[in-house]
Length: 363
Ligand code: IPM
Ligand code: MN
Image (cartoon, rainbow, N blue to C red; front, side):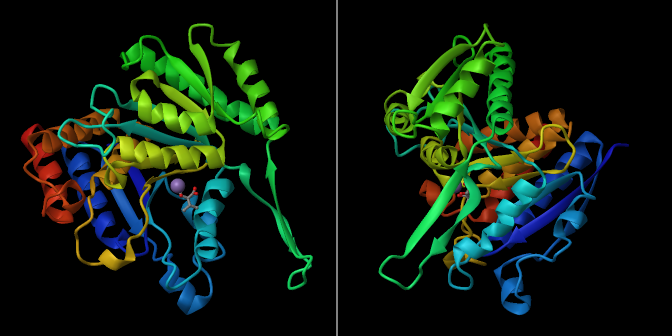
């Protein structure tokens, strides 16, 4: 029997309760689809920081490297630790494990309503590929002359050819796969999210990498949108988009808009992927830790369950992944279980149980 070792990092706030749902779905999938899962949980969080002075131990990456995959709940609680400190943990794993692709599917399930009126299950089926280890998030810079009238800060983007090229190439390959599967777009299309009209070095370089990669994919339609205009087009014509490739920061911003297209943060998941498999990849709901709801079990676990689905797909359990997707669709489609964000009063556990029940019913 195949077996998978999964590291769990529940994190802060509602992280613990959503991770319980992740484990339940994982266990159900392993039971039905005949593979083994063993999980180990790590208490790396703001509470740990308050006790020990660090979010995670010094050998954290070494510890994690023994796992096949990582599930991350949610990190950060600004009442305890400043966000720019606590969230370094997330960025350190992304960079340390060369998880250079941030995979963010944006799909609106039937039965879910989006606050954006153009968004329907027929119009929203997009995949954003966000570069995940460099660019605007390179962490290069400093504070200077602090406390004087001449104080200034520098934050430098680092765009390497290799870094741009490989993320963009992943996007074109994904478009090719999607068009074979019959996504909503007539042909595969990759939109280049850029800002080369104003960012005259980094984004001009990024565009060159895009053009270079596009030549290897004559079957895929090319497209370009400046990031500001892209936010507008995503709202106006979501159905136009198939795959979007974006730099780290731009990808971050447009996927929050994407989350609204798909019904809200309760539905949005992401994968931090090292495509070569040299290191474990990491999957997470992209919402925050919602400290004020901690322990109340009111948050929507669908984003978490989606993250588990993406993880299983990534580690070769595509049948189980598809089964989870079918179960999510069935659960949301009946509209009987609705969490608070959906205007209902079902709990986190009730939504999780409904998905698990749908999996069992179709096993
Ligand atoms: C995300 C988050 C992170 C990011 C934050 C928490 C550092 O917003 O995963 O989208 O900006 O990448
Ligand atoms: Mn974000």
